[in-house]
Image (cartoon, rainbow, N blue to C red; front, top):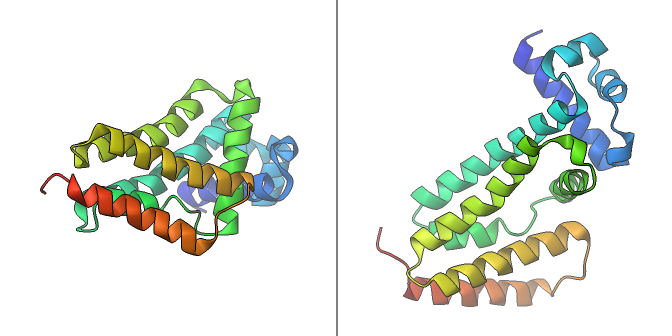
Length: 183
């Protein structure tokens, strides 16, 4: 069994426990058991619960990097990609991000590295939006609207009707197109 395969299985097991049972159910033993790996095998890859959580957050950063790349390189542009990805694509994604944020917020032993990675996910969008738009106020409005849509969705708060959400996004894109820097 390859090292990366074992590492991925451990992170998959952690993700399943977080989504299914919440952070309080995460133990090294439970993750190892659900991944079909010995506790020693888990400790080889992740010497602590904090390292395990950081590994999951690093995985999320890798996924976000693909979105960042798409935003920078596609004709669609940063604003459209950001707003499109501001709506969770699946119930699992919603649950995963909520679990990770809740774990980071309520359990300081998870470590500064994981917190730094999560901050990066949010601040990098801010940098990309400001780089694309000549109007910093509009860039911040779009950032806060997208973050608000995402956080409300993962927290299970009431959502506007899908048609209204799309109209909001369309309006923001329309305004952004007026101040978009040439590529």
